[in-house]
Image 1: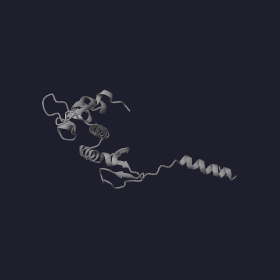
Image 2: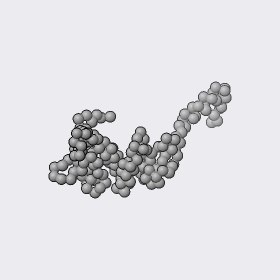
Image 3: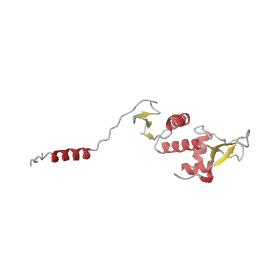
Image 4: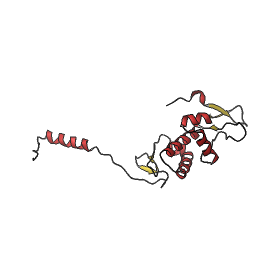
Length: 167
């Protein structure tokens, strides 16, 4: 995992200049980390898809400041968009990521199947996050047929029961 090092700064609220608020990144750092063109991120901000939560860019020469959660959301949206997700799905995914971050999504993997965003819950069930939020989706069982064959052959050989193959 890349170290953010000096790219994270402590922001200060105007009301309490002495107290440090959450760490933040400025837009050039967000663009670099996410591999997103500046113009795309700017468009997403102007259309309301994403919003920097530390400080917006209103005003002349005022840099937008993004929290770590903001950056995670932007990067996830970029990955989903690259995979073909529609803007409607991006909006739903962003709301879900922002609203359920601490409660449900930490230490979770998210999967995109081309139509739905899916997570694996604590019982290893696939759960829809967009199409039918909270509902289980296709339960997939992965079988290694070759491993099953090898196990069966091993058991048959151990019992001395080899069969002849017909020509």
